[in-house]
Image (cartoon, rainbow, N blue to C red):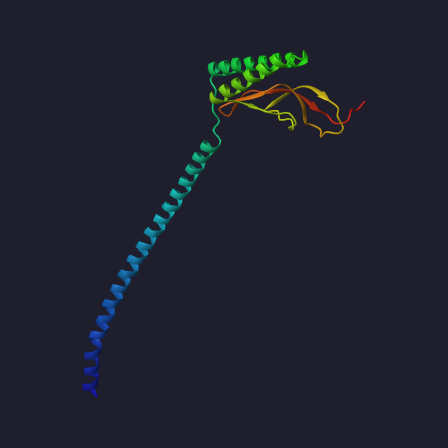
Length: 185
């Protein structure tokens, strides 16, 4: 029996040694896995921050492209204003010709207005038609009010001078007459 115990101890000793070595190797692998897991978490965090930053930059660029808010310098605004005033004077002359029943003059001025509108458009100046639209303080300046119960309150009934934009920026608001609905006395 002593012999069997000795042989058993002899057989168990290498197994115990192997178990201790395996335990050490397993501990080293666990430490390495924890380290790599922590590194992966840092990379994931950095990736998430980079993704958020890129998303914000993309949104900012998209906003710039889709809604450019050009700043119009005073000299350009003055030139645009002069061109718009000339166009308005043609419009007034046409109204006068129409009132005097001078068809030829009316037709000639209409042609001049068409040419003028094309040239203004090519220069980046656009006229915004406001007749029949709802009053917008960013685009309209109210000159007077009318009382027409058939129309919705706030509807523009007459445009005395047009609204103009230069490359998307309003350079002159329209002067308009707006409906106030029924007259309250």
